[in-house]
Length: 116
Image 1 (cartoon, rainbow, N blue to C red):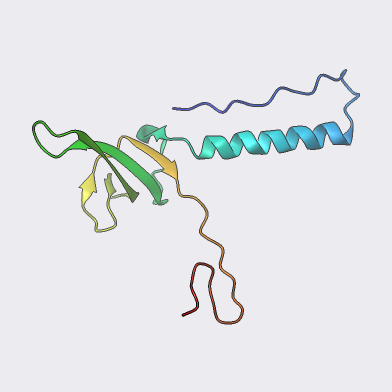
Image 2: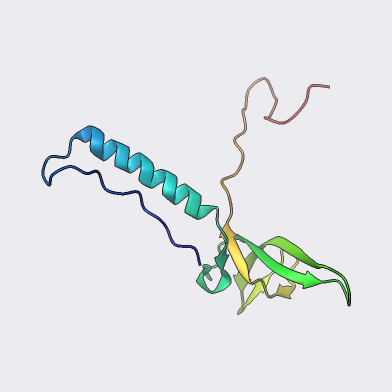
């Protein structure tokens, strides 16, 4: 499991923090949290409340083949991690899903679509 490394506290005497010091620390803390959120964690620390996550597991296709990393969205349902199809699997690591892409609703086009 990856630990969150917090930025150092400002080197200012107690009681002498300025609002700008607090703002700077808050920004650095936010960056540290964003980095931690994009790192793989062991599956034992994953939410088991039905939250969808990205799971990962190393698999071998057969004797002599290089291991292949399988990643898939997954949820913990009825006592097991399940692919979207409902089949159980045993991921060893996970990370939270990233936020969904932002779409622009205007002129009838979403981001990523091409005029054609």
